[in-house]
Length: 423
Image (cartoon, rainbow, N blue to C red; front, side, top):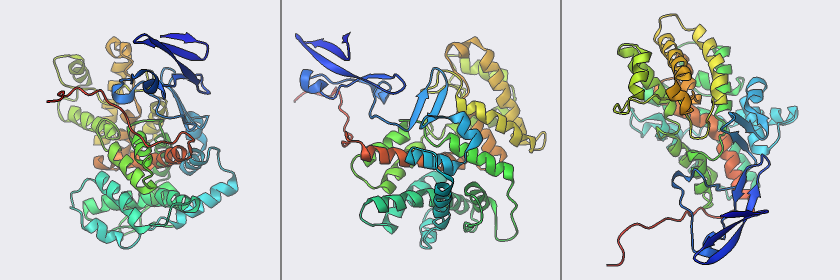
């Protein structure tokens, strides 16, 4: 394979073909193989799509080697410090940060659409009491397509986007209330996005509920950090399902289902389960790390390493500071405080141990997000739901971008057949 100016030449079976090179705005280069099979009979083989660019996107940029994450060009550190989740949602969906009037109008629209249709109460009651909140959320979002069946147009897509962003916190809180057998708490129009969600999660009709501003702010930050992350498993699923021209509700529901997997959105739950296991046993982080390094032991150090980041996950750096603020409110010696102490010890060991440094296994966003959720009183089985709540604007933005792509096609990967020949 030899480069020739803006193309790559491939020789196969006595024939040489030239394939164009594509370069992104951050100097990422790719070989355009759209005509590879037609010209050579070859296809590429790439399990897990680790080296395959499925689309051109202007939404999120990641440099895993340098630990860089940007939404529409804005560094995640700046957005985490200076923006709100709804500002970031607008940025992802529309491409620019909103003006003050745009943000006020956007927030007002979302506030007016947080209520669920009353028939949704019957929807939840039809599900088992011990149903995990994640499939409940996926089913509820899919069911929304039966309540809003208008023909697809720019206007109805806009309404769908607003409904998804507005109603997802209500659906998430209702899935939790159903799980614990408490009555649903209606949203309140005088509260901001995250305060409203916290109240729906933890308030009861029996007494007034006071919302801790730090909890609301931290939740807003967590949603920002999870808002988009390029072409991961769930985002690719949303794009794939959307490529069949399935509506936005169906596409987002598929993304929620993909996110549920323990190798994707369920990773922060695995971190907490690991920390709890250490705490319930000898509490010795050094001994646990030694087991994780032993190739004959199945023990895994959860929350370290990332498919993309080969340095410190920038989201983990931001979260660590807020984790310390949240844990400062937790009584010393409490289960959450003990888990945080173990987490800090694990991080200290891993960052100084040549075994992990050599393999570039640094803390990722899941490492601290689970500890924060636990300290805030959010149950472990709701962690992935919180992830889905934050990822909603990213999924929406990616779905919209794919629909507007001039190269839009239904997703249809090839395969290398390895089964029996004709018999």
